[in-house]
Image (cartoon, rainbow, N blue to C red; front, top):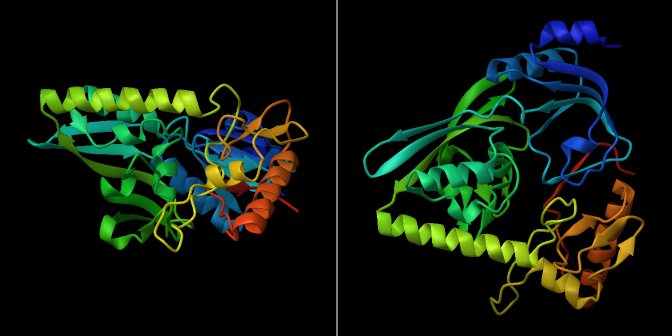
Length: 311
């Protein structure tokens, strides 16, 4: 059995045993991780990964906890948190564009605001997506017609215990998914367009409108994990289909199980209304899936990640 002293000799960052994960989840839900570490830097992440792989201990990486549901039973093995120390951003002006180096734990909305204020466009569409840059890369996050992989030059990962630089064309990415699921994302480089003053003003105006729409249509006042389901493919006539609209059409807005509730503001959001458990949330997920399948013949696919032990 791993002891705390052994763990602290392996990594330079914070190291804890039996650590509660609820405060690291935007849902404010979850049990304890057997092992929790917050590495000091990228080298420390590599040290931790090699240490856990040598001991054959399972591990998962947690960014800013905005797109996950952590089990009530917690997580067996180790959780590596990147949100504290892997947040470095370097913006290099290259004439008509900028090359932006970003570590995986950096906050995506803050990065979008910072780059836009400096006159570089591309991320403003994504500024309402909570979470880390690493998490956004892992799931190819997108909003308002833009996906983050449209901006990616390369991604730095740990794969099989080694650090690798993967160019965009070496990564298989798709709607809300990539083939990086078994890698640890460390950093990336983004290519952003340099905006004229007029373009910058227009981009700021668009961002303001998108953020206002988000405030009006999403349940931001209650703990949640963002969109629960991916939007399904278009119907046979090519018409787009939206998970929230399908769930709403099943009459499930406002449906509550335990302390969890399908939001009455946006049906593709489940909120922690009152001391919800992961079991409560999972029950609503299964209810929505069942009813949408029954009514529309559509199988909803999760956008959030389930972290830990689920029955």
